[in-house]
Image 1: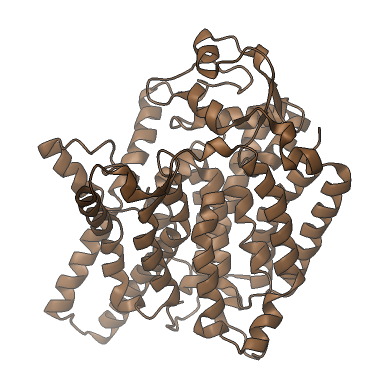
Image 2 (image 1 turned 90 degrees about the horizontal axis):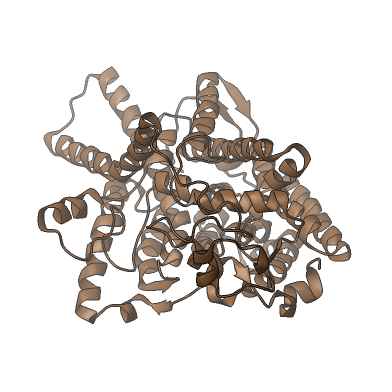
Length: 534
């Protein structure tokens, strides 16, 4: 997206349509498994067929220019990736999936107690997963739930686990864990290939920033260590009701949301027409409902950016296609009815300032948050990318998203920001790749860098290094705990049908599961009355 021409090096040629097809397949296969496993046959089979057929249509049309245009955008042309980078990307993808705790083959962070239980129940229970409260044996859990009889349904955005769960039903739980890790590695690998396409060529900055991109949270951490101010709760939770997490934290806690979201964002950025946005963008609803709020501005930006700008007739022709309309309607009906069956999962919601003691405190916290989380990367990229539509979209979104919240920990801000944060991550990788190209060119021409430019470059590099601090802290926690044999909490839950521990002292597992995963009156919901198996 930089617009600069770079010399291609010899390597492996990856056709755009091949990468696009693999990316769409990665996203749509879990949805098809959900359709066939969770829906009544006369609903699930037609829905699954529609997704499969329209995905094929999207792949066939992925290189066709927008209506009214004859030029093929450069993003749809093949990219040549040196073999060493291709192998490096593949190895890194497996490493990051493993290191993030996917499948729990290494020390995993506390959220994995719930993630592990989700996959376990999808493997061991019949679909749809229904629990009987009488199977709970822990008195503390029973006290928290407040029920000893009756049934409840598992309601959560667990579509990402469906292929691994199906594999586990066939070959056992360990096979499911291994499949999930490799499936996640495939998604990460496809994201890296997409980043290379956007940046013009593969480079080491792409995996580096994909893993460690974050904010300047080191500054409030230092302030807290010096003053002990009371609003600080964690490294990346240093003001109330607002938080953006580094990529390492996202991979290590919500891989089931961030991997599909990152891949969809890259897909949208590389699309050369708008004929399948309803499919590619809409699929995020299956994985991250809050993430949809963040992908919509990216889709609108892609639709109206200079490369795809059309007249009204061309816009309407590309907008009202089968691949745009049908998947969006099915996803909205299917997942909208599924998620809405559990209305208590959202918790508190509204404008963020309502949850502060005073508007003055909110303004101070908000401004500090933007200065730490948004301004540094925006400033580093401004000169080079200020005319880039995706850059402008990301800056606006990251500035506005903290003004609204949903759930007690504001999952809305954390997940709706994922597409924009990925855009910044991609552009940052391209920024340093271009700096390297410029330095090489300068050395060849024996030119010296000006003093002002040198100072600016040093400032940018130091800022970016400090921005990776939260990612390194998370990596140190995982790697250090694994090296010292620190026991993790991956088996604290076990199964939602018989929760082992009500709490681990930090997370109230029984409370979270009861409010976010259980739905008692599921048979009264639209989903189970008309769509889901009973």
